[in-house]
Length: 571
Image 1: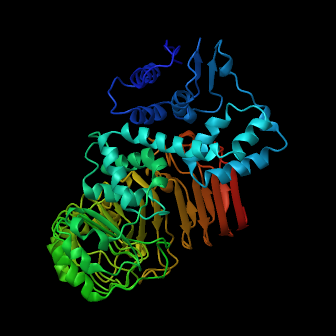
Image 2: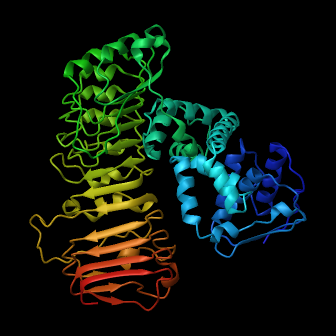
Image 3: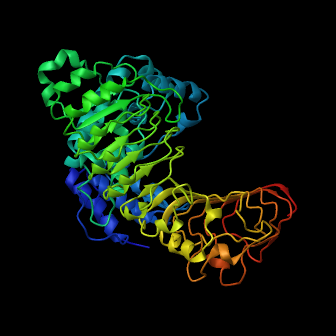
């Protein structure tokens, strides 16, 4: 519980309002620190009171500025159920008339408002604020049927966007302007945009303890409402005289074929081939081999190259001359190999090769990319080169095939302590040495939130009747979903899965699924009393399918368990 005195009597300036919100933040235990903008203060505020119950009392309020009330209210939306904000005021406008919420024509009004907004969230906000002061049917119909509604919405949107943009910190302005190179109606994906910002060097303005990736995602969320206004196409043929000033350029896949125009752009930093098709689509656009060979010598300042969804079969060796390259995307192409010269791209941060079905190996020179942070080979059958463990800055590594033709060992993961997100491990049946498995140090990789582990039905020369145990996974602090499938030689699941009882086990696990575990007979959810309060605190869904011999033993309830799916099981 926290108490504070807040001067909210009159409508103040933006600076005074920032000071007032900061006073509340500090009164609930927030640190005494400076924030570059109100947005960053609100992010810190939301984290501080997230899932906590509170009572806020604002006495003698005279402020009628609805925008400021929204800003004040926003951080409190993350509070726990039961939280309350009590406001006292002698102003009649502070009272809300809810008569229209129960009106029989409410649905018709809602449909009309949505049509007026034309899919723009900001337009919906502006109209909502306007209708807030209208308390009867006649006033609503007058606004909806009149031309003033369109003018009002457009003017307020432009005004709000301009005001919001001018008040952004300089680094957010830079990120927003960069996104203007995307196509109209392009669906912005946070991870994709974040990697591009990182490649351009826009993420330097961060707290020392925050990773580039987390800061980029935070900035994306702050700018998300702006993205619907982006997307203006230009004709390069009409602006040849100014081409030398262009630094960032995108083109529509399959439509832009005049690549020779790019030879005139001497300081191009970004070249994005964009499309509106799905990332895993089989559709590809034609790109003659000679185009890339002729183009690369003219792009010596290039940092970002995206040619995904093009029918490229070969990457020229000259790619190694692009020494400023930070982001390279050949996803969903027909390339069969990458040249060894890729290893000369010493500043490369992101190498994206998702869905390259004909790519079976990566060059050994990849291990020279000491600044590589993201290697995406999802749905690509390629093997990682020996020595991949030397890339100590890797944040994401989607697929790892153990014991393939190159003899990759699981111990290669030992030094990749910063791995996060999704990791898939295949060929674990070829791990025969316990010490080697322990060297992988999976328990130290606490930021992995999606882990897939695959054992084959082929167990080499070992006895197939040998009983196997699941690895210890309870220490993975960020793991939210765990799927265990087709491990037919596992008979019991117990304390070996949970790991050490000295800390909270599976602290963030939400979904647990077992499927086709035909030999599984016994599941001890809590093997001793010391674990019961520390196991599965967030688990709400369990799925058991085709576990015909299973019997479950549990003395304690899983606290938040809500959904249980059971199919073809004896339990």
